[in-house]
Length: 151
Image (cartoon, rainbow, N blue to C red):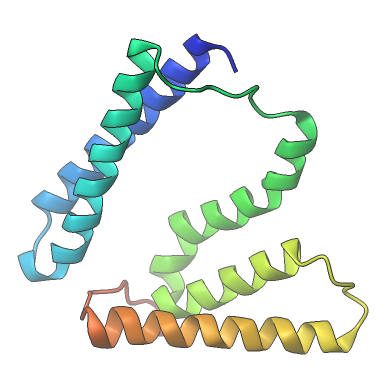
């Protein structure tokens, strides 16, 4: 990746960080957005730091994405986009997260899809992940999560 590409991409991420931070500070009710505000401030700080480093020429830019790397990332990007833009609000945070995580694990797990034991392993990993997410967001942090058709 040449330096101009790095400056453009880090600038784009910085713009997204500003928008996310702005959105988290302008939403109501205030209590529901405390955790997103903290995260968005850190996201903004890191994005601006990376952008400034790119502008100053002090960042270590790699060679960019090869076509093979892009093909490897495509299923995850597609699943994540559907999750972010449609599923989380439509199905509810925990239901959509369960489905998206299971699809991601199934897509990237190198174990054969023909072996029933690997499907059991994927289900157990997904259940454990969702249990931790529920405990963390709903019980410990008491964060508002999008409600949908299902919890």
